Image (cartoon, rainbow, N blue to C red; front, side, top):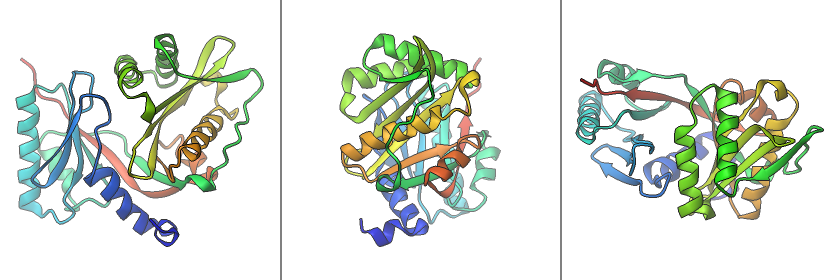
Length: 271
């Protein structure tokens, strides 16, 4: 991948689509990725794993799109998934694919912005506010602290996060980095990084901070810490699906917006 490609957002998006979507790797132990017709999807190994479509053919027309959507609904029903996500990007085709997903029973959640930055362009010096220290996640006690910070920052249940991080630490720690921000012994923020070997990309996830510590640079410090690890391990790009809260911070740090991504989630009716 040459510098000319990576300085052009449109061409970088093409590389991202190929490496991270069409050639997607499973996001956890036991999961598998399948290419079926016009889509690439992940099939999880347990009830805690993510199931969904990560890529669809860029030349989908209306009839093929409807057939692909119907096939994924049938796949979800057959597997007995509690939910199945179609990860729709802003440039995916046909242009009304979101409407077609909605018509098939998928529900759109809040859109996020796909941001990418060359690791070499990012600051890696970790500047922490007074009273905060960082610790990498290494064992079950750390995972519990990570989940607690997540629950307090986002107001959501951390059960899936607990399961996923424990599985990564147990079965694939080489391609996972978890980090805690602690005030004394109390977790105030947590974040993780997924390393995708062979792609040049690493993904940043989490980073939510409890309300009392927001606006003090904790989030920026977690980004810098993970950028430093990515640089040490030879990864060229960091990728983030950013909420509207984190997008402006990341753009100030040097990330470029490439497109949007919207989760469309199908939840089968249960008797």
